[in-house]
Length: 175
Image (cartoon, rainbow, N blue to C red; front, side):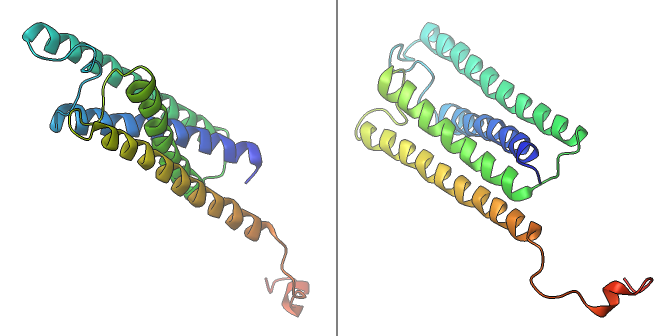
């Protein structure tokens, strides 16, 4: 696998992972558990007007995660059309790393810098926010390890054998 084809698969995986991280956050934490909304710290959803406003911003958030996912799928499709060799480890590692990137960036910007919302507001909200950031670091590390193993496997496969070729390799028709 060439470096550029490996990068195209990795970039696609990164975007798919960012989208997946956003979908897990939005579907699990916003909708199912209803722990927070996009603007729940600056516009607490205490009446119908603020609930609807938060719902609009949650929807815009989901549009962004959908766009990241669609771009990742499009890049993956393009890589396939251009003959990029497939590496499951590279793709899986980069999607896991993309999810970690989402958790870190969203956690730092929305939770800490802008204070738009917290993972689980109220008692121990800082612990929940730090746990979310830690999950991002762990996912990034896991993605790096998985992707690294992919590049190690590629190097091993491309290394020529160290033993002498067999006699059959020199006889026509015996390969």
